[in-house]
Amino acid sequence: MLDREYPQRPIVGIGVVVVDKGRVLLIRRGKNPRRGTWSLPGGAQELGETVAEGAAREVKEETGLDIKITGLLDVVDSIDTNEDGAVRYHYTLVDFVARPRGGRVKASGDAAETRWFDREGLSDLELWAETERIIGLAFEFDDLLSSGS
Image (cartoon, rainbow, N blue to C red; front, top):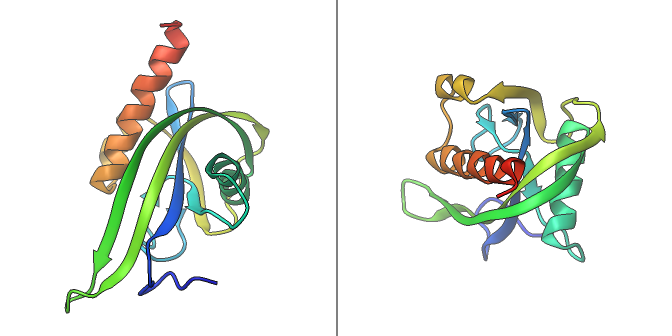
């Protein structure tokens, strides 16, 4: 198993923006990095699974929902260094947008809490800047998909 803290190479991570009726599903992280903060459901890709399979698995594990991926949003670098400049965490994050297909929302796995937020409610949260940007892209993408453009 690859060490997540002070890794020897980047880890492929997957994030999913689950949107439904103008809302986004977020989790409160139960582990580092960014423990205690609101974030997208997701996690590390496992050996032998595609990133899409990993996205569906992570959302199911953390939120209880089954999803349908509707698009690929972006790839984001998350590199965290310590005070000496050593790389403490290094993730290459593949971010998808998806819609719920079934299940019942319930926090589990690495998620300490799971909650739906409307667009306006996001401004009250202290989100990582990249998470905010990715959520914005997801809403744009979903709006286009909904309008049939």
